[in-house]
Length: 349
Image 1 (cartoon, helix red, strand yellow):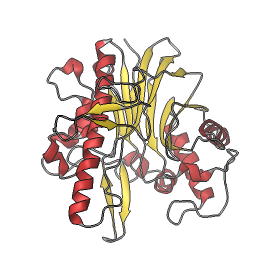
Image 2 (image 1 turned 45 degrees about the vertical axis):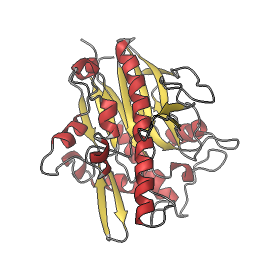
Image 3 (image 1 turned 180 degrees about the vertical axis):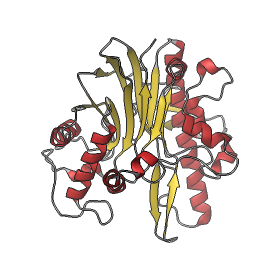
């Protein structure tokens, strides 16, 4: 494998709504779940984006559902074949409790991949020591000396990957819990629920961080990638808790051997004038304007960072290479409310 290994993370909004129960694509003029975009238009846009990425492996956040009737793998492999992608094989880990899965689409000529969950299953009470991601973590959320039960609605996807030249690395795909105060009525109730959701999200990140430290202690190359619904400076609750969830997973220790690297997170942490990269774009109806945020990350271990990888946010307005390609720019806007993030990892010396 002489060329760099390209890995991507991409949150595809309402990907599930583009397939029927048999995994067939709904390439028609009916409305997609994206505003004023048909299902056929969104599928076409996604084909353009995935082909432009030309990634060896894509961690897909909000992939199509797996349940008694539907199959994430079947839907994604149908899409990959129709789009002519070399990354045409898919797998998932533990199905989620929602209609959104975390899946990995990859090129089998470049990568050998298997679902390889770590940690022991917890008891019904839960465990404080990084249990398997489909079980229960115990953590004292409110410092009252009583630990609460924490679960992932979307268990992180843990993969063991071997490249064509025999290099091994670990991938963890993440979709952390949203902090939005759904269901709360009144300002005080919204604040209480926001704080509770924030604590849960941070506990999930502490759980992830325990797993990361285990891999680093074992000397393994690791990439943590996905949508954290969080980032440095993203809300007022960061001051209350001291760190964002992203900072926790990256590592707050001063020891560089125990820290993960993501340059976009670093830029946000160091920014003093409010300038930072963004990976998602949402329309806020009350304000009648778009809001952008840095939510998607690709974090790599020190050994991988030492190779000089190149990160890229495929932002339709901020990347000059995309601005020059109108078809790709429009496809990125139609395909999802998030933009892909890639990292090119040079081979080991």
